[in-house]
Amino acid sequence: MAQWLITNFVAELGQLVDLPEPIVEFGSLQVEADQSNDVRLVFPDKTFIGTDLRPGLGVDRIEDLRCLSFADGEVGTALCLDTLEHCADPLTACRELHRVLRPGGVCAVTSVMWFPIHAYPHDYWRFTPEGMRLLLAPFDDVWVNGIGHPALPTQVLAVAAKGRDLALRDESFTSLCKVQDNWHRAPGQVRFGPLHISPRELGRAAARDLPRAVAQRAAARLRRTP
Image (cartoon, rainbow, N blue to C red; front, side, top):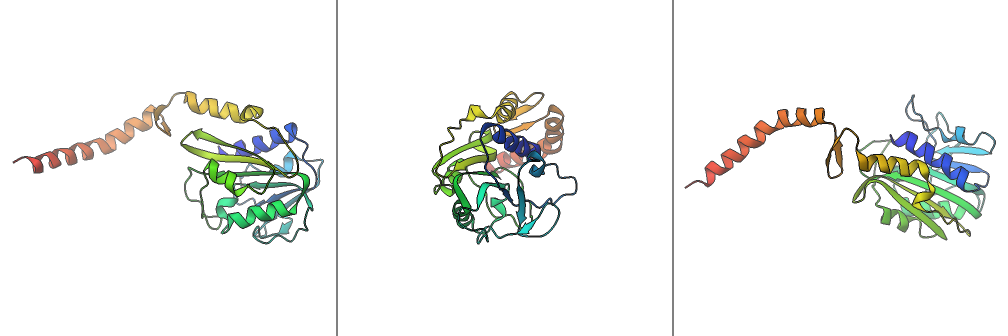
């Protein structure tokens, strides 16, 4: 879900806000062969530069987020999509994104929060919405939103601007509102806090684990019996 959610988010951002060129993606390597989140395709008529720490599909230029080779104010729009969790020093990375962004520029950042460890090549961090705001503190206008359970979002998304007021609200992004509404409705699923599972999965889990739990509880009661 994360791949198409992010692609739709970026596409909608491009419709809501004028995104200056060049558009530079930091973390553009298409790691998986069937990866469906090549945001370069969202901007066919704009100058787009894909950068990553490693060479490969989707990478035009090797860059380290902790020490970018771009000059001050050289980037019009910075995209850092599900990449910060793989950066050893995210605070420095965000300061660098601010430095290379020109006045009037826009920076879009997304990162997973409640998500399995995924080493591309390393997975270091998880950021709450408040943590994302802290990372983007150097910017002048910051919008942050979490997708999923309010206390444990699966994805955190942010848009920041330099010398510019974007006036974005949660309701601005129709695609994200639909995803969040679908999460709340949980069609055909049973809700357990942040977990939404199908009745079949629930039945399998109960059949697999209930006998063990009942046996352990019974044994604990026997131990407490005088």
